[in-house]
Length: 294
Image 1: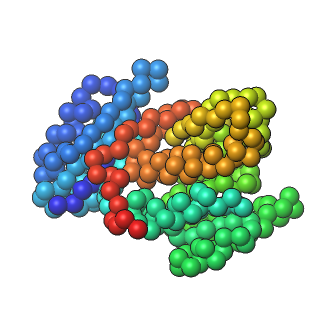
Image 2: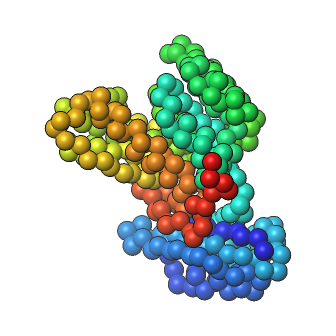
């Protein structure tokens, strides 16, 4: 039996859950996990449902069967195979901890992604990447060539069929045009606990404020720098005895974990953009299982 998932967003009204579950049952599907949320503030309804097709129905069959329900409730609805790996482009500059973590998680199957290319404005990690049979693209970015550089980046995204761009400490600001074209499909890791300490050197800002907690934030990228809808965050405790350099070093582990969790949520269809915020459903049982241990 094939495991599929359905994610739905629409205006909240009665009868939605009944219509979805009845349709799935009528077409030989058994629901194995589900989560839902009604946002009273926006009037929006969100749900994600995992199910098994016990009668061998394909995604095409299910989409066709569900189309009248989606039309009736004006739904944004998406069916997908939970086992299918999403194609991802990773972009990185000179800090490699997040890149290395993602390469490892992808290799052992802890993240259901296929990294189809790594784009960088430096050559630092070229050998690390190509040794894993992944294409490495070094595209220098300056004020003068930024439009051409981004055009080349987007060409790579299209040619590889990438569904998601991950900024793994890529230290360049993307243009408004690129953010709009890839809206909801670019995830960034910010080395600070947003909304505090935005922009450059956030650990230095945190150090100068004498904070007792530092953290990392993963969010969707928008034209407003560091203002995109937040997907995942975490923190670590620090004391007066730590230096600014300590903050940077201690923060790296948090950054890698937060970014990986955000990508995991996105590729499993657990994240819904809800205005300036997100709805993030918990992981389904078994979704963190790896193909191998090393």
